[in-house]
Length: 220
Image 1: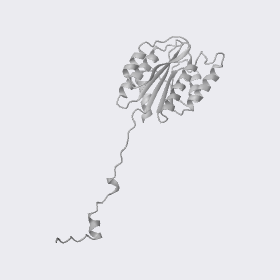
Image 2 (image 1 turned 60 degrees about the vertical axis):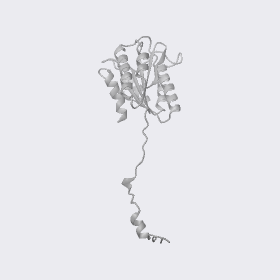
Image 3 (image 1 turned 30 degrees about the horizontal axis):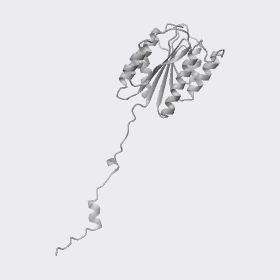
Image 4 (image 1 turned 135 degrees about the vertical axis):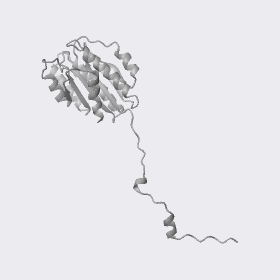
């Protein structure tokens, strides 16, 4: 009959037990892709020479989508002209879709800034309901003045203030790019930015890379 091996004592077991130190622990970190939406709200009326800023906004939307292919960030563009604002590019990750939608956007008509703000707010609210954790950046290209009230006969300044407060309640990052011509600046961009809680930027020349730079700083 085979003799059983002696049971190792506690001291032997302690010697054989692997030593685990804090530096040996690892944690799996999940990276959340596609958790940012950049919305451009652009004056595309004929109240001023908007061709340059419209071209810059189009270029910025396409460039951001090209750069964000891996991150899966989304971009949207809303233009206001004539009697109302229109979501030209709904939130998307597709460069092809953005180029297709933006190809036929040309300036013209009146300046319905109120509807532009309201349309932006509706889009932002929908995104927030769908994904409360989504980071949203709103970039507005405007001189802060509108001439088509959302409610016929409404006081334009009071209406803009009320709409700006709605957007501010969403607690998003807002950048207002003052597109007033040099030497013709007014109080309106400053007042609108203050109500929005927005950064106010005055660029000598509104260019694609300038707009992209403003947006990319949101990641720092």
